[in-house]
Image (cartoon, rainbow, N blue to C red):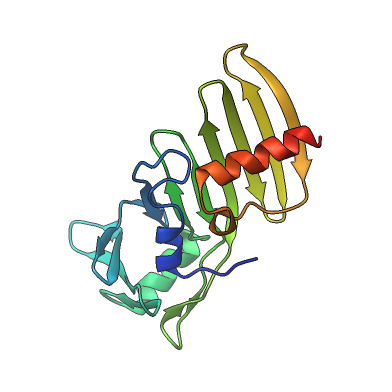
Amino acid sequence: MELFTVKDFIVYNNPCFSCGENIIFTFGGAINPVINGNWCAVKLVTTYSSSLTLRVELSSNKFEINGDIYQFKKYLFSNFPMRLMSRCSKCKTEIRSEAVEFDFNKRIIKPFKISDEKLIVREPDMMYHILSVGSHSRIEITDIKKGISVLSIDVNCPLNLARIKTRENLIKKLKTYVIFS
């Protein structure tokens, strides 16, 4: 399974693979972290007297904290696991990472894997719902006009958008599964 940096994850499904819209990116529950050039800034905690912000350099995956590292470790302990997620508000496609691990000696975020992917692809007459968790995928195909499920199959391979490349290639692959199921 492919390993990702924070930058790789942001690019992986932006714009949305299923419908082409911009995605909503979250990091550790913080909605829409600020992505500015080569940095991603995530406000983790804001109180009346202080704040805790995580900054990640996208080219190297190095991180900085705007305060005490002990406060950040305490935050991680109480809010574990910290994950990245991309979600499309239009078609509801959603991709989540595994828990992010921090190397405090090197001050980097270790490369991580995709935990699960949920894609919803619509055509005029069919809707494809793909749920991929690890090395297992479940594909459900619904006839929109009739409102019935046409096919539900389990596939022992992960979904990999980087290999599929386009929405059209995904639909061709799904139609192949239908023919041979």
